[in-house]
Length: 433
Image 1 (cartoon, one colour):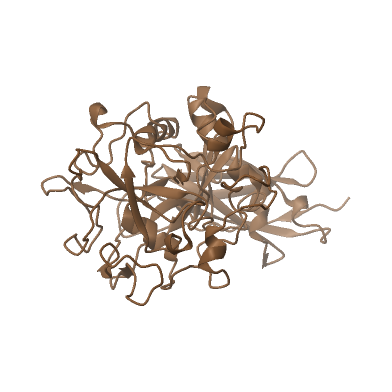
Image 2 (cartoon, helix red, strand yellow; image 1 turned 180 degrees about the horizontal axis):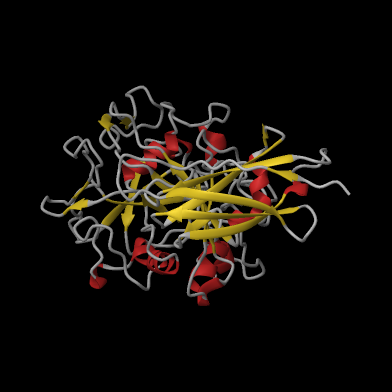
């Protein structure tokens, strides 16, 4: 019987900084199970996120090879040694005696791989939600469009910081639907990468975190229509998501603190408070939505009307006579692989409302310290245009606001986490750096 010949290659991550995690040794061996190899390694300066890439006969295997690895890989490793298995026969199918080698990479927690996934499958009674990490969209098991990431798991994409030259927020005077008072153009610099969820938080994801079925207006208004797991959780307020001022939660004066009983608080605690899941800032949201584009839509193939009419009479997962949201991820994503940034539901941001934004900081703006109207109502910003909004609202620059304790049938959200960020609380409002 022919055997697989195994060689190994170890990539040690080096840095000028002290105490940076790195791979020290790697050993490959055949498992007792046919078509499977075992990888053992030692790690200096844990914790680290460990990923692996394989080659066969000197050729790099596709990233889909990571779908078939189990153990201390694609996850945070806190010990000085780790081990995982890889079923190479699921990837190497045309070679009888492949020479296999592996390259391991140790990532710091502040500079993680491109994709992060939270496994919500244990539901609201879980004490912990595992974190998984993947280096590319192809490495995400089953592929990014899989329904898995709209239901039992929540997938995040790392958004790169802006260049030192920044990006342009707002809209030009010529843009159709523009609100001149709210959308003045200004240059903004973001100095930190951040994770942003690929899809809007869905009803099933909300249920798996909270134990309730979320807040779908279709469920409320149409008793015969059931819970729809892949549609966005709507009718959710900022207080539902982050907590209330009575709980000491008042972004940005209390920086990124959230209430322990809020959805964000539960998600943080069950993922070990490694990443502080929260709503994105308004600047992060627009930067991520644009994904390098500068026009009135990130998808030049769709008109604003097509972006606004999101699932109406499409017969997807609702009665054709109902005007409402649609399954997340039905339309094409933007250039960074984010779905539904325009249309479907208006998405809450952390920033308080401010009409004229010209006096806000250029670097890492977090919005004003607070905003209330003449009646004492607190207003937060939301972005992206909802399914029942006019086509002129479905633009990256469009800004809306609402009482942060209230809910709306076209308002939802997606989670974010800023990487490697710190706060200066001596300023008003506190500044991110």
